[in-house]
Amino acid sequence: MVKRGKKKIPRNAVEELVQTCEWISKLKKKESASEIFKRFLGLMNKYADYFFSMPWPQKYDFKEATTFTDEDVDFLFEREEDFADRHMTVCLKKNMYLEGFMGYFGILWTQQAFRERFIRPTYKPVLEAFEGFAQGAEDAQSVVNKLKEKFSVGLIHDSLIDLLEHEYPDKPKRRLIDGMLGLLHTVEGVPSCEQERCSWYWNQECGTSSASDKSFKEDTS
Image (cartoon, rainbow, N blue to C red):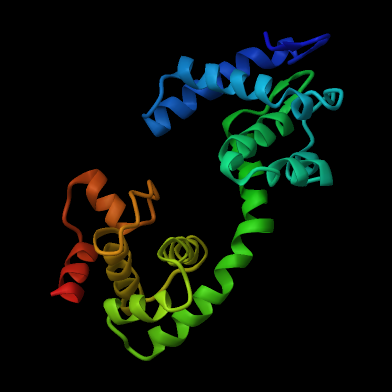
């Protein structure tokens, strides 16, 4: 049990938190469930002043779990180098309540809400520029080069993934995007993204050659 003075996480949340760690371990395949659980407890202790700043609510509240207060925002952006840990700490706090813990999907909903408010707006100028180049029937390399004049390769990559998550591009545009994703990873140095919508990552993970693989080879030949 995590304690800070008289503060502790609810007893009813422990079992569901353990189950969440098991889910994450099976999905991500990077850490064991016990390692994830220890990491989460470490975050609660490290950021105890924030994590235990308010009494636990009786029940889960979706609106509260997907809304970011001034306290949340100040905590999240206090130290950029600690952002990943702080982000997870916020997700853990917002999904914990006296009767339990909302689990993997609760964390996912909080993460999605954060992305909608703070991350997706940064993709808009990239995608607007991409649409202009795509209409000009540009090849993948030339589009990447033009976008690089204004945006980082990481932002370009994430913007394209966001487009695929929210739209269904026609075959020519999808072929262009697949070629660009391949270039961003193999030529421009974007690390493995673990994004299932990224054709390059999917091909690497599955070890298969798909139609998108072929389009990438044609664009880079």
